[in-house]
Image (cartoon, rainbow over all chains, first blue to last red; front, side, top):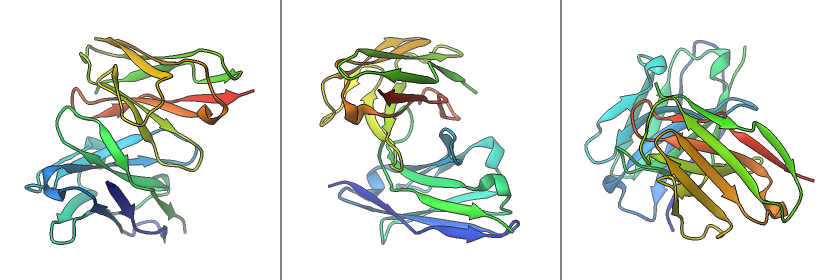
Length: 119
Length: 107
C-alpha cells in the first residue's frame, strides 16, 4: 500500500537546522510530488511548500523563503525538508504528504515528525 | 493568499446526529476544495476531494458539496469514532491554505 514513513523526533537549539526525511513506498515515486505541512502544538495546518519528485521543481511558502530547502533522492524514494535558523515558533509536528502537484489533494500523509526548538 | 474560514470552531454532538461544517473562501476557488479528518495524535486523512468527490474506504456518511466560495461537509448519523478535527484545504492557487479547523466532540 502507499505509505510515507518519516524520520524520528528532533530537539534543536534556536539558530540550528533540522532535516526531516520522508521515505515513500507502494507507488512510483517520480510520478508525484511531496508537500510539507506543519502543525504547531494545538494549532491548525500550515502548508510549507512542494517539490516535484520528477524534476525537483519547488514552490515554497513565502514566509519560509530563504530558510527552507526541499529535496528528493529518487534512488531511495525519499524526500527531505531542511529548515534553518530555527526559532521557538518553529516547534511543530512536520508532515509530508503525497501531492500530484497543481490543483490536487494530499494523500496519504506521513506519520509526522515532532521538531522541538528549545534552548 | 486565499483565506478559508470554517464554522463552527467547535461543536459538541450526540451519536446519530447530522453534522454540517462550512468552509468559506475569500475568493472563488471553483471546486478546488478538499476535506481532511484528523483524530487526536494522528496525521490528517483525506475524506472528500474536489468539494464533493468521495474517497475509496471513507464511510458513506461523509459527503461534501459546494463550489465557488461556499462549501459544506456533512456527516450523516454521526458515530463515536467521528470525534476529530476537520479541515478544509484549497488547491486553487499558491500558497495552498487550510481552514482553521473544526473540532467535533461526541457527547
